[in-house]
Length: 268
Image (cartoon, rainbow, N blue to C red; front, side, top):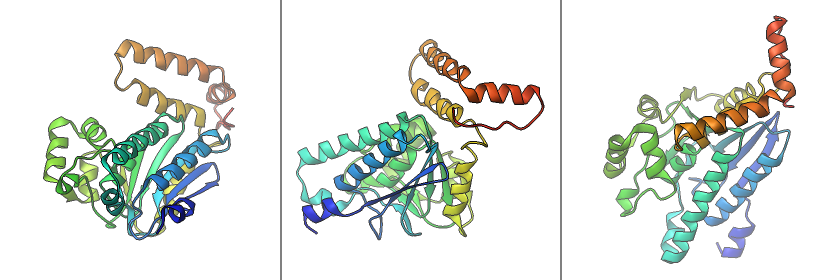
């Protein structure tokens, strides 16, 4: 495929559904990503960020065999080291934008999730995998490179330094059950109606069920405060809390508690 054709091909499907912005990687069979796909994903992240009717973002892969097998190796084999560097830089910026967006991000891992696919999933806040549908891991060492889209950093923050190094230097892939034991995966859902069930899971964090601004600010407080000094992180937490105190949803939530009735949240 020519570069022009690749640039105009739809590689990311995006739609909003009942308060959830769904970002689907769409380059069968393995949903491997190129700069063009990442550029489209970046646009979808921004679209979901700016849409006041989107309260949760769901990431998934097209089909039922792959979430994503990571970067497109044929593409990497055809470009020079300078392009590879800027490709990784843009991917870093894209995933940081996802983490910085104060809306909950749920990865619906519908199939194999390896290499850069896992690096994308690790930038989500919650990861839910489809039972018995694939393997997970960071096997980049087998290509003579390291996980260069945040893998070395996010995995080590999840499982600890020594375990992360072990997983990456062996390059082994493992089951979703093993990933759950290591807290890489939050939960595993049944194979049938997987995406619909994850979508329903996402909706519980949307109004009127939950105060979605509180959900988003909990995410933002943790993501922003994770690696700064505690005193500074507490300041971030206080400022976000003050914004929530001024919201209609906080007034509603507190009043509903006092009046012993269910709250009706409006995301305002």
